[in-house]
Length: 119
Image 1 (cartoon, rainbow, N blue to C red):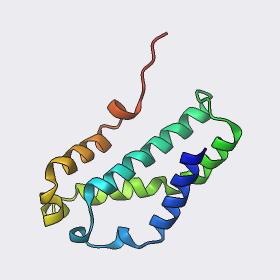
Image 2: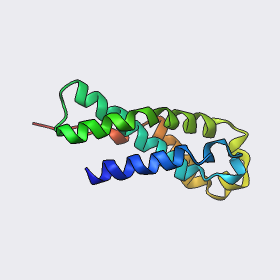
Image 3: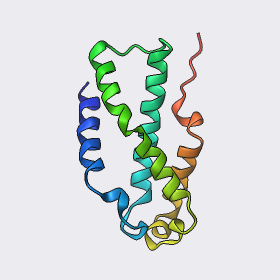
Image 4: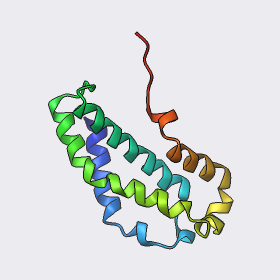
């Protein structure tokens, strides 16, 4: 529960900070893409809850609901960093390796966020 509470507090602060409106040269793609991957995980967690495949308790489910309005930020971040012009900035090129890995992880999230269990 503490993790979900901290995520919510951080997202509230981040969403109100205006950082998403800054030009690419002032942003760190790998950091933002990490957030977008986490927000994709929130979306998948909610899907699991709705399909009754989750072991979250009632308090965690409420907090997960509180996080859902922030999920579109992940899509916004992905869209921003997929644009070739944004990938040409110094901040992208200085961290190109990790930026590309993080973008690929976001684009192929199934391979990283879906856990396969065997019975």
